[in-house]
Length: 175
Length: 433
Image 1 (tube, each protein chain N blue to C red):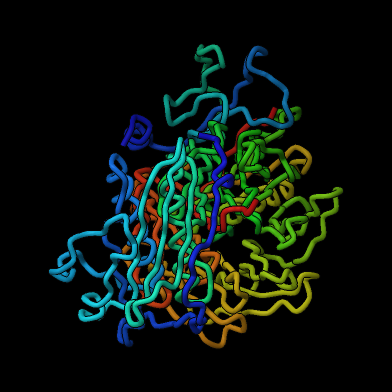
Image 2: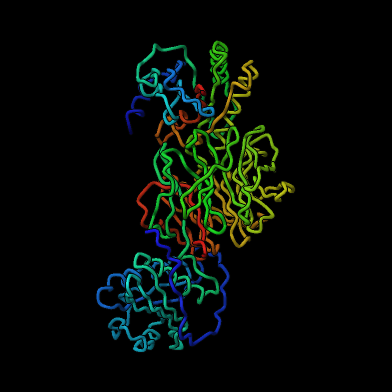
């Protein structure tokens, strides 16, 4: 459908990188998310799906950092699967090494169900991820949630393969 | 273009027959098996002064669409007109009902269109063909850019005459228009004409809901980077944030008095339903379940609300009192249920049932009786009622089109005149002024 979509198929895994944005990009306004990974649509930075690397706001490409993993869910479920728990354990390890960073957990849904319901389901997924990260020792005040419902599919396809990629939580750096 | 149409003059003249027609109940016959209850009506091209012929033709076409859409009228095809009919003239006394009566037409819609200065003037009459008498006579006028609205106004008057309840042809719809990541709030006439984009947030702005009086919209936008709730005044276009708690601020539903909003917040534990007063800063929490509670919809008297919860497993429709008491399930179709909408007459709740495909059902408030009302291909979502409770608008989320279903006939049709991707419709009367 577009460049982003085609590149999705090339990516072997959605593994994102954490980098700090340059000061010029840091307009501290509430807790605006600055992407350090994740899919399109969030304000600001660029995404892994676009190039596999993070850009700084000025367009320069920093060296890839250690990976933060996207987690995936079953249809109409906010229950953390075993693979999601493993990914969250790895992510928690990363988050522990950057104690000053506040993480925004963005919950997403596939297009089934309704636009309105999916806003709630996406939030439920983000809350489930947050609760598990807190269990793993990440302070709750460093974790904020946002739901995009079905507004920001990672894959615009209309089949289960696409939907499976869209039922997810991404982890962005809040600023 | 911002000239108010409310400056137009409505004057009644020579109402010869004031006998009241029986107000027909909304007949729930969506099976297509029942008797055709519609009144046969003819709407020939209106008479016009020189230069206004195309406006007159447009207005008669609009009225024919409105009356057909209502589900109360069956519009006679032009091919079926009596051979003796040679078209309307400016002289209404020349209207001859006899040949129309002979072919079974019950009402004849007449208008004569002229222009006075920058105003269009419509001399509108409705004839009862059986008695041969005029039963409605109105002189309507407005700026020429409001000619469609003048036609809609006459349609509403005709429907009120035929059913006892004003029509909805002057009503408006709002919806989200856009593509992934760029969705704006729009408003249009109920037939999709005169679409106007109300927001320029360049973000994701969704789920607009009219206040009862049709003057304001509550909606969700990510324009300030989080899903916050805003209220927009339609006339001025000004919008202001009304809820920006951490987490979700979504699914607005207006209290009937317009002084508070039900909404879904996740600020405390998970997704719960709150009522937020728009005067002061008071939030009242109504639900407290482990799962998701969302999609509140006020009853028209404000005493209750329908909502969605997954507290028993799959998503189902529940009803509770305004204070959160007496929460009980009303959907029992199997599968999942979403997006409840309480009818303006208070009698029914429409919602989405997903049993492998999503369709709209209408249920009594107690849930004991229900009926599937849509069958069109694709997934239906976001039902909202017409102000007269006779129709439901919904989004086909597969095609991103807006559709309506007329409950008395079961007729499903795409809203014309809109050529953009749409979601999340709502429907309200045009504010009186």
